[in-house]
Image 1: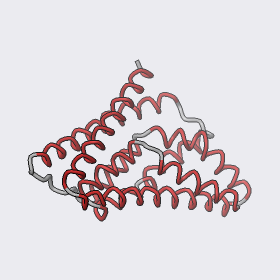
Image 2: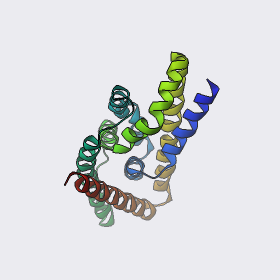
Image 3: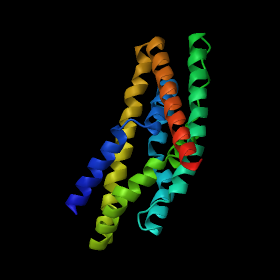
Length: 204
């Protein structure tokens, strides 16, 4: 069981530390809203990964190409919307007009959709976590559950650390916070454009 737990912790930490659209969204909200309102969003994968787990296990760790393409298209559009919102808040900070803070429940819901429309969790479950979970479950259900617990504890913990770290930028002054907000908005835009292009290329 220890091997599966160590793998879950390591893979969860790597997933949290790897630059991605969820991380860019968390940084954007942490800088503009602070860690208290953003911290619940760090646990969004606990809910958004359920479809990935179900789909992957039902089709024996193979994700249809069409599903991935559709997710990329819809997810790209959603990321561009979030990028536009972040840039709008960046411009308002430049003019001294502070954008109202987003409620914690809305941040959590948006984070769920960011991850739900991201094909990476589906691919990660199909290529890595799915086979490991099936192998662990064959050993014992307790081993499979231990793997899941280790992975999501590490993933949520790493994401929470990112939220707290970047929310501290608010205390460094409005200039630092504003530019971090602008950079996170730019990152969301890049991820959105890339995901939209990849999805459109695969479909058309």
